[in-house]
Structure formats: structure tokens, C-alpha cells
Image (cartoon, rainbow, N blue to C red; front, top):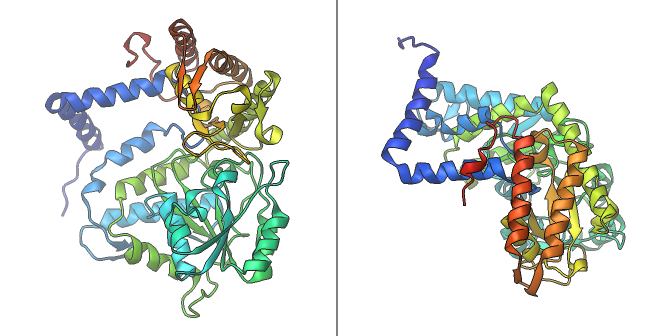
Length: 458
């Protein structure tokens, strides 16, 4: 019989952990403190980032980390999984409910591994896959030669039209020409809605499976602000930390096709994925991350998140409009989601120099290639911004005008020496950094204490 302990035991456990870290490893504690302050005191506008709720973050620090749990709920290869099974099943049930899916696997370590798991579930080495080119907003795992997806499989890429929209006609033409066994749709730097039904029609016409990667828009899908691919695609993948505000990891979903027989003629699609996650690709899953995912799935179906999701879209629209009003070229002329991509090379600045100069001033964005980019991936002609983190600060559309004014001032002050080096006046940097800190204090992260301006990490 297990001893009955008070509900305060877990709180004391966590407090003890913090105190032991502070006392026994002050060097590491100081670095973690500096990172906490950095996040509180800068404006993080990286589209692939968000600010996880502390209730999800603490799940990552739980004693669930101590349990080896190869297998699945009620089918483990180790003992001691009584509560682990319930936690994972809770995450599965919440994921299915949030996305309206018939099957969910919460064990993938990342969206990258989730994509690779799906590919190896339905493809053999040398088979053809069709995905969006990396330079046009796709992902490494959609067929890039730098990824296993472009080395083990024969990858064919579709792109964008000259007006910077997905070229569905090209995708259909290439599908008919190359007869891929898998078509990948979904993007990392595409600010417009995706027509999942059209992609499914293309896949069905050539007998291909369809994988929808919604890593960047998963929260908007749950909130109903972007159409869902779950019943259009055979497989839907996402990470759980960009827009679901949960633990860092991946997720595989299957909708109405979950019982469809796979290419081996024996197992269903759900059974194939189940076997490819474990034991083919992964061993014991990170149960603390799965607990954090469970928390994130509960959060994104709450009324509070519905407001956050609406704010994400409102802020990105205001951000794009403010850039265009300042004369910047915004890719596609706007946005339907959280992503805004700006052509800074038109102003004579490379993306990498813009990224570094803005970060000096407390404005965190990332360099990004733009359609038909003339610069390499390590340099780029654009920057990509996102509003996930800004929405958690409860910013308003009017704040986006101020953000763009600050960004515009920095870009105007960059003296580019070459494609990777620049000068920025120290007085300008200090002035913009001060304004960013003031804005952070005025719009603090909702779940963080107000930033302490005097303790900003150098």
C-alpha cells in the first residue's frame, strides 16, 4: 500500500530542486537566470518560437523523467509505468480531441522525427516524394538534400508562382510526371492559407499518400483560424512548442484514414506509425515532455487560447501592414497566419546582417530566404517574423506600429560592409534597446513577473 502524501509534496520537490541548483551549481543557475531575463527583456519575433506557459514548463522538470517506459500505455517493456501510462494516455486523448483526430502518437521527439517516421512508414529507400522546395518556404524534411528525406528518397520539389503563392498547378503536373508515393504539404515560411483539399485531390489522382506538416500553424488549426488538414491528409504532423505552447516535441495525427490498410497490405496506417515510432526510430520516450504536451493540448482548447490565437492573427496583419506603410516589401503582400516575411535585401542589407543588428537592439527575428532568393541560405535576402510570443505579451495591433518603427530605425542605421559584416552606431543601438526594454515592461509576458530593467543580461 502506497503512503498517502499531501498535495504539497510536489511543490516542495520543485522548490527543493531550484534551491539545490542555486546552492550547488551557481554557475549554471546564473546562466539560466540570464536566459530567463533575456527572454523577459527582449521582443522575440522568431516565427518558430513561442513562450510556453510555466504550467507546461514545470512538467519538463518532473520525476517522470526518471522512468524508462519503452512501448505504449498498457504495453510497456519495463515496470513502474502505472501513472506514466495514464499521463501518456491523457496526452493522446487530449491531442485527438483538440485536432478532431482518430489517432495520435505523442512520442516523437520533434516534428522532424515525426515527418521521418511517417516517410519510413509508407516509403522504401529510393521511392519518390514530392514536397515544397526549401527555398520557397518548405522544410528540410520535405525533401532537402541536406536531410535524410532528400538522400534516402528521390525528392522532387514544387514551388511558388511569381506572385509568391503555392503553385498547385506545378505540384499537380510534377505529381503526374513523377508519380510520387508521398506528397508533403505544409511550410515554414509561407504566410498564406493552404488548400489541403486540393493537395488531397492531387495525391488521390496519382495514388500517393499525403502528409500535412502544420508545425507553424497548429494552434490556428485548433482555434479554427486555419482550415484543418486532419481529414484531408493521410497523416498530419506538428511540433508541440511553436504554436501549441506546450512541451518541446513532435506529434503525429491521423484522421478518418487511420484504419486504411497501408502499402504492406497488412497493417493499418495507425499500426504502421505505431511500429515506426517504437521500436524502429525511438526507444524510451521522454515522459516529462509528454506530460508537458498534455498540458499544452488542454491549454489550446481553452477560451483563453482562443483569444490568444485571434490576437496572433490580428498582430501579424498589423505587423505586415506597418512594414508596407514604411515602404518595405512584404512577401505575398500580407499574411493569413502568424508569419511575416520581409525582403530586406531590397534596402541593401542581407538577412544575416539584419538579424544580427536587430538582436543587438533586443529585437529577435531570424534571417530567411525569400522566393527566388539570390543569396545563399546562410546569408539570405529576407527576415522572418512571427507573432506567437507577442500575443502572449497581450500586445495590441497599435504596438506593431511601434515595433516596425524600431526595426525600421535599426535597418536604416545599418552600414553594410559586406554580406556578413556591418556597423551600427552605438548610440542608436542603446536608444533602440532602451525603447525595447520600455515596451517589454509595458507589455510583459503574461505569465512572467515584470522585467527588471536594471538586471538585463549583457
